[in-house]
Image 1 (cartoon, rainbow, N blue to C red):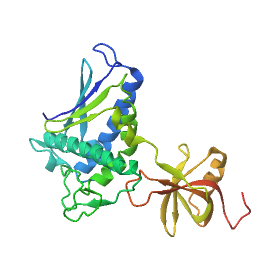
Image 2: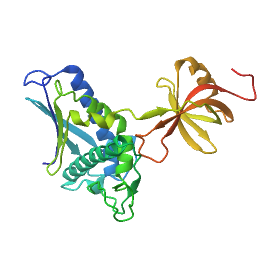
Image 3: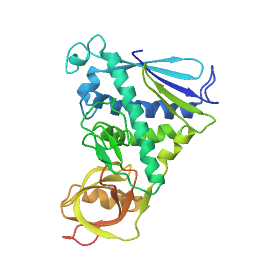
Image 4: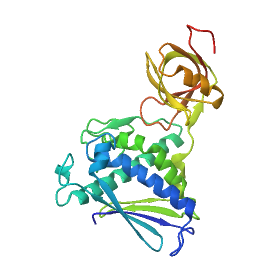
Length: 287
């Protein structure tokens, strides 16, 4: 099998009719997951415009429960020529399916620790291969509570939102379960996996004032980053201060009055984010 199968089962997916809202959410987030994982399996960080121009997905649908068959068409020239051998699409499909399977396994194990009130320490194994299994053994250069190959951490981080939304569609009724399968890998997502998307955010009561520069701001989503001497931190804000945020973007030395938020489901070592309450330029009057 050179393709990846996404199979959706439930009351909303009969042989002749599909639930529109569930279909839209599932296909959108499934495509986003693929977009994040494909570059990693090819040794790249993101799905660049050049990579998009050289690789395409071909999708076919089969009646019954919703079945989406995804095949990869690789070029014979360009930056992916080395991967586009006779079995190029087959290899890519297998690697991507394994990578998604391990990401889900990793998130289940990670949640096991969170549910026990523990923040797990991650160990990184030497062997950087998508098929390296997640395990609880102290092997290679690991030594953490959960040991993973290096590719798993960015894969889990990049796909976190899309995986959360995909798992969130599985309600046990309209969507009973999701199946992602290639020739040698099968991942089944059921209602029991709702626990991996549960909230683990803790908003601390104390306020802080930090000095830095707004960067990478998405005004519509009310998200961005603050670059300080101590590093880069993600931030959010309410609509009431949107105009202030806009007026101070990309300026150095801005003061931000923030409330720290600890997100225990951030897989990296820095789970701290800030919710901005107010901001101003100390060289000017308070806005």
